[in-house]
Amino acid sequence: MKDFDYIIIGGGCAGLSLAYELDLHKKLENKTLAIIEPRDEYKRDKTWSFWKVINHNFDDCVKKSWKNFSINSPAGTKHLSCDNYTYQSIDSALFYKKIISKLKENKNINFFKNIKDVNLSKSFIFNSVPALENNNNNLWQHFCGVEIKTKENIFDDGIINLMDFDCEQKGSVHFFYTLPFKKNTALVETTWLSKMTDNTLKDYDNQIKNYIEKNLKIKNYEIIYKEQGAIPLFYPPNTNEINKINIGTAGGMTRLSTGYTFLNIQEHSKYIRMNIENIQNVKKYDIEKKYKFLDEIFLKVLKKNPEKMPDIFFNMFSTSSNTVIKFLSNKSNLLEDLSIILKMPKWIFIKMLFKS
Image (cartoon, rainbow, N blue to C red):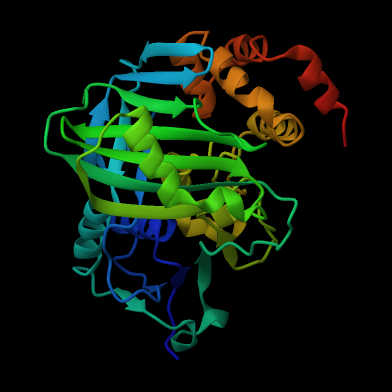
């Protein structure tokens, strides 16, 4: 077994973002780093999308940006702008290529497939692999998306459809999500907010096919890419260990009401880099408590009243789009929080506030 100053367990988004941040700022010139990742090769497997409320290291990995978005529900459609905070979509293949090529230039950084090849006892560990409890009562955001290419120019590539609730709900929360990369190319995704125990919700291929043909009214297309995943809408156990920090979803960097994680990972990576010389004594980085509190109430409402959620999301965007974007991205002030809260159905949320 080899000894290293730092070990990152998991070479996905969180692990690679941290390694890149440390390397970029010359924090590994006199320190050694091992990255434990079992995959044989890095290829496109994810699409990370978010409103750009902060600067980050990966603008050159952005596949497309938009300044307009829409929300659909049975009640109607809202068309909104996001000029101040463009909605960005990162291609994981470009992300992986950029980081891996940079890290391989540093002889102090080594990749391993098996954790048994390194000595954990003498290193400071950054763990990105969440220990998820098998609890059937937990909520997940589970999804499947396909990138399609059409023969004709069908899509308006200047606007995304962030949420389309005009679809079968099956006693849960279900919406479709469409990102047009070009006039003839788009990612179309089916997304559920539910427990994972109902297998009838996981017929993703048929859901997408029906939506493309019936809602988007597209008959002739080819699928050029497919992705699938599940984001826990609960925090994994985060035990305090002297020589270990959890990062990514394992470290609580997922915003539970939205599933947004990418920018939280970037901010956490920057925080670690700025404190790396004293990392054993640094205060734990976390999403602000007010968002955790509000998300907890939100998820209680979602679990108890899933049929209300399309209207709740739709009405939330009745306030300023910039305010909603900042709230969903952990950047809102107290007045902005209040304006969001006032758009919620008060009696339902008050009941959930006092419900254990």
